[in-house]
Length: 395
Image 1 (cartoon, rainbow, N blue to C red):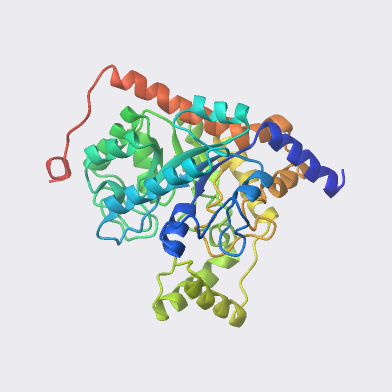
Image 2 (cartoon, helix red, strand yellow; image 1 turned 120 degrees about the horizontal axis):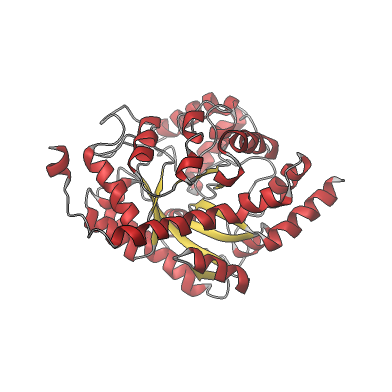
């Protein structure tokens, strides 16, 4: 089959089984660039000069459901109100673009959006700092529509270790395990992207519901602490969860790891946070790249991770979480949210079957959210909300 025919077949498949993307940082980009002025970044118009995401490109990419990250930086002193602002941003987007974005809280809502030809619009909180050590705040985020929480971001929280920080509590503390149990009781997916491997293993031990990795790749393919070790991937079938491959070059291409460390240090030397993607920060990034050309990831690079993840975890336990608008660089062919057909075409070329691709793009993510809802229903019948505190459980 020619490349053009593969791409046409990919688009046809996505018309029936669109992509559920586990992680898009558009709300944070809107905060950083225009302080939530949606007129200034109207995603009904071409935003390719500023963002990875707009409605036309979501449609071109075959996206059928999007988890919008309501991320806030872990060093903010006001993480909870900042998270609420992020949630409000998503709600504004849903209201403004109601013909396209359908608010979704359940697996049934996702399927309803697919039938209607709209994009299911879900939310995930990125980092346990967003609950400020409060289970009541966790429940409030769920009530506001947040359907997963990443236990940490790049820094430890008091009760969980991050992949990119020094070991603190050795994985999950007693309160951390209670957070996981309370997420199970609410029906909020436990997201293990960003956490240390010790935290991954502790969470899998503690949870009674499927977990997700909303945007992580395979450590055996690219040895970065943000990626998932094989022993953890091997546990996903018994857990019922899924790992959603990310496109971030520094997590998928080994040659990009050292380059990124140097680029991050250059950002800090110029007074910018290393994750800053504002226009001023990107000028610094681009200047560094001109001096020191970056290693370039491709669609094939990402497909290598999916091949490995399918082999280790099984095709029922993988998905896609691009991390668009949360990364300064993207792979060639996956430049923005319109690129998913290129990845599906690459996998078709590698012999992936249509049923396997339907699981990857749509069915696995819908099943996992539905399973978390089922667990929550059972748990709520046997116990009430936890009022445990960090001080009481961890001393």
